[in-house]
Image 1 (cartoon, rainbow, N blue to C red):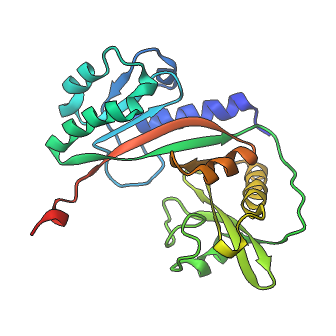
Image 2: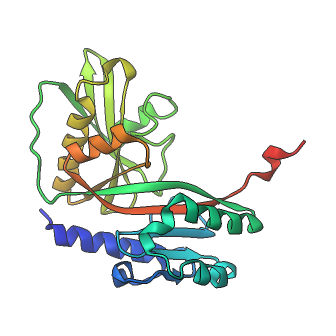
Length: 257
């Protein structure tokens, strides 16, 4: 098992790759502004640099942004504690500036890392494990959009999943995508008829432990207002670790007449 310190160090190294900074930059008092890059070790969610992305681990904020934004950002962060840059009143100012370039802010991603221990969950549920090649039969459906990807994505493949069964029917599925070789993100879906039975907590806990056993770091992400997802994470040995957000292009043609 990795220690908590080892987990934190690996997360910091990963974020530093993606935000074009040093790991220590996330513990500074002042905001850090950098230029975007496509690091070969990044989590491959897209194939071009973000116009702007920002992250905080609870102290300051690191902002990776197009150089055209740097003068404005340097003024924007003055006198502001980094963690509050994600609040709505500051977001409004940022959004107003981004729209001049055809961009807007997207969702915030609230990310959790695991405590450095196995949970060793025991359950009476009928459980079945799915390796990478077995997961592919479930692509193209609409029942498990959070547990697995919509299709096979070689840049961040679904490598492991676990399901709870009611006879032959799948009640819920938790899956891991290898966002990097050592960072496996967990997603969970439970069918509506089976919710409220603790299935999500059991499946996520089982998958969390198995990822650890395979020498990966399981991590978990959710949105600000998804309280059921927050409760699942906290019940499965995860702790809040960082918040990140990015800008996306405005779909101008959507408003065309």
